[in-house]
Length: 445
Ligand SMILES: [Zn+2]
Image (cartoon, rainbow, N blue to C red; front, side):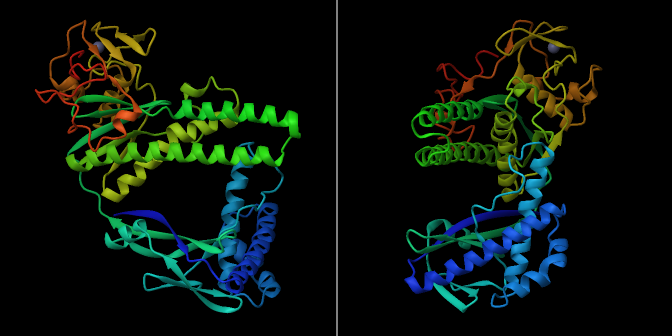
């Protein structure tokens, strides 16, 4: 059984001043608690909620006797998580400050602190007793309610001061059992594209994720230079522009990742196939982004292009019960999947097999080798039994020496509109998929 988890945002109606003030006070106390707890946790290297609670509960409780006691529990959880991620950053040398700043606060709630009363109101325990607020229903929320998702007991609430609303982050969960895979879909994640092998066709779906990261990086740099000159470093207008750029960048990347994940997972579910991914390391040591010297920028590209895409696929796969398999990614593009011999690469990600002399595209090689590894092939130089069984390129006979294993790149604007990889309108009369050049998809194979 796998558990799928989703967060859904629900807003309250605008609250009267007096009611809203209660939440402003609550947030203030909660923030103070989290600040103190984080300080203690970081000083003592605590990352476990249970230990933090054991060490600090009594004292914090005596400072806020008017608060429902469960706020101290949730503040401990919140603080432990902040301390955990801060200490991790510090270990990796990426923490910029000696202590984590508690800037954005959302109040963590557990089952004692909130409950849904029907679909349209939520009651919250506060230092002034229970307060009930009406919420605005939205389509997103109803969709989860209607599709058999279960509302979890943990929730978060944030204050929207400008509109005097509460913003709830509710968690929905669903248990899904994974099926036994009948086939495999392999995904080779790259900086700017994903190569996907489905039914012996390699699709190269362009994502431009690292180009987007770099583009925003340079835009921010230009803004910084200009504003630093006029207003001095860290000015308000500069921060405002940064914030909006960051928001745009994040939203765009998220949309790309989610669409991509949905497309791949739907294909897998339809075929009852497992998805095969590379096992990525913790650190952005990927050879493709080593050329980027700035460690922060490298980290961001890794997160967006590699980790982020994988995480989106994993998340979507859990929802559909699609099994995900991880294989060792080492040298996946070095060895010919047919002959097991080394491929000699030239320019443009193209290479020639040193034994068969056939041409390969690097991403097609990686996809087939991931498939071989998933099937139990060692991916080494010895011809494996599995290798003979896999119909590379749709047929059991290796290709002639001049054929190119060529995935045609598909631009983001095109695949983002697709509902599936096989059944779209851009097919010719023979039902063949058309490449970006308008020729049948497999004409170059
Ligand atoms: Zn070969």
